[in-house]
Image 1: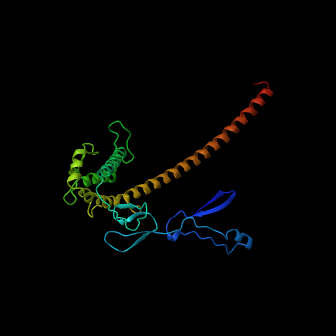
Image 2 (image 1 turned 90 degrees about the horizontal axis):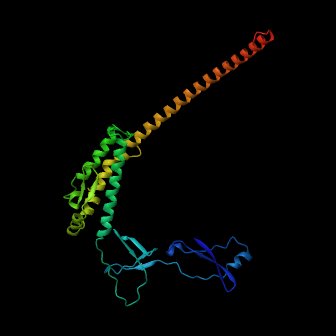
Image 3 (image 1 turned 180 degrees about the vertical axis):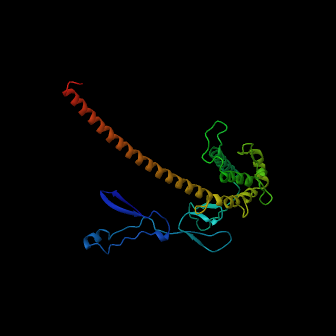
Amino acid sequence: MTASLIRTDGKVSLMLSSDESGADNIVELDTSQMDGASAQKFAVSETISTAQNAKFRLGENTKTYESSSNTLDKLIDGVTIELTKAQKDGDDPLRINIGVDNTATKEQMQSFVDAFNSLKTELGKLTNSGSDGKDRGAFAGDAGIASLERDLNNLLRQTFGDKNMTDYGITASRDGTLTIDSTKLDKALQDDPHGLNDLFNGNNGLMKSMDKSLDKYLNTSNGLLKGRQETLDRQQTEIDTKTDKIQTRFDTSYNRYLKQFTQLQSIMTQMNNTMSMFGLA
């Protein structure tokens, strides 16, 4: 809820408004706990806008639907409808044409390719052996991480249903990164606009297969990367413990030698003073 002070004709009024729309979000003020004088200040109120739901009918159905928001994003899967004004009696019904937004589809495909290539580059750095003059990666020679990279490459080459990535112009170069043939993608989207969605999001599509395949690596309970992290944490703890012990031993030895050196200095000073007394210095 938002509270605002409104000044009109020299008077100050308090305006209360709900941050959410719909009949369930009506603003009500309870003055039962106020004293008489305070409650009297709120006795006169004016409703500027009544909280109510949007009402509409869909198709030939005479049933009336209600929504607390003017944005309908759960009415039809994958479709968002924005209600902008009320229809008057006698107005013709509104018709909605739903088509495929190929531009948005291509942008999403490019985002997928960019994300995969970034992952590929990062995995390459982590598993680099250092033989090419570059820094040796933290997971160089790690069979588990190498297996993750192979699984990703194999998934992108699989056929899901009767489609694969190359049918939509997405191919892997020699270094494993992906590229998009825009011309081939445009033609595939024109010939089979729903095929790409089936390829990626179908019940046995790429994304579900990738999610299933990567679970053994990314599972937060028993995944390979979780195990690697726990191993590294344990090794780091052991190193820290050994470092602390070495530091303690160093401090002990340093203090012992410092004490011995100080005592030796004191003895030498006393000897020099004694020799000076006998004129031997």
